[in-house]
Image 1 (spheres, rainbow, N blue to C red):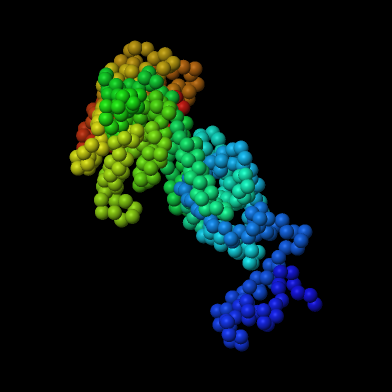
Image 2 (image 1 turned 90 degrees about the horizontal axis):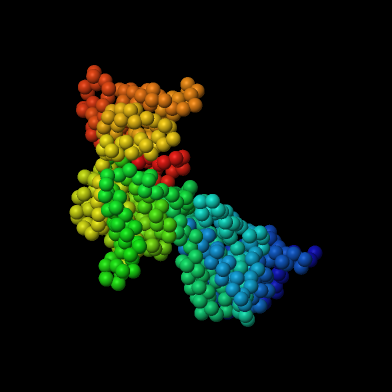
Length: 523
């Protein structure tokens, strides 16, 4: 009976020379016996491929490409954040596209869980045990813009050449199901200096051509709770001054702090002035804070925008690092009052807000980064801001709209309805103390009432009916959710004497910075 494929039969003398101690006849240790028996079982269970199947032998393919044993060459490694897989993939594509370079891309099959193995470990396992064989390349389809996805290599070997240099690059993306939340690149080359240069050039391409540059992004938690990706891409808003209803002069102050500094960055730098700035917009819910930020985003198309809200504000560190790399940038922190007293998730002693302010200060004065903060409760933020002076350079109150503002809002949201001056004046007179969100809902409900009676147009009676509903006692919670403070609006109900008992604050209105909403966005 012949020996099985992949099983090597050796003589006792050769056996002792290869595995035993120097003194002939000395017994093997138990550890040595166990190791040899394991090798025997692996060889029997997974015999080496026959000659016709040698192209599936991963170690043989690498040896054939390199012209020498892969284990004889040094390996150099670099790692990136999990969300950088598209950037690393594209950087490799660009690097290999240069003149004088070429590559063949192959995949790997074998153990599912290989993320904790280095390239050297994989080669050793493939060579000794046939644990890994050549297979199809693994791809991950990832978004690189609001409307575009890219098939990125998530596990693949680039068998590369540059002139006389022959080398291997292993690219592996994150594997959330195994807790591996990073992108790794490993380079196996005869010259370590060559591998170092390759990784440095890849890193430069990652930064220069980042798919995040100039995008509007928000952090979202991973499905398995590891890392900070993926990002969600958003379309940049397209608002004009006609879409903004604020008291005279207020928008100009905000624009100068954010847009003005961006447009005059070179003059400020030449004069030794810092570019990093912080803007706080505060006021009752539903008055226009988020809408104002959307307007600013519309007029800074070259800025990368990173949005943090709710629990994602704990990612302020990575967000600031991304903003620094992709500046000019905007970091938007929505509803900061919600974290004013919250501790971080690592059991920190300071409120999370203090950590946010520390990260803002850590960027340095020369960073072309603007921080835009919104809050419904400036009183909760003020103590922290006073203790950390200089983080916020300008605080602007967005107040409830006055009569002129309410008339402008009704004209904005009700444009095309053909409402006459009489009904408009009536609405303005009855809605003192209401918000822009209230006006938007009033118009929507008026149109709905008209549609229910199958009318081709909205009549003044529809508006009155909608207004009566919204100001009625049964819609008190609705008003609060729209940012209206009880007691400010005319309830049109003489028996409703308890309105002033309710608290003057209101819950967050649910106004989202970049939600897909038709027509003008809520204030």
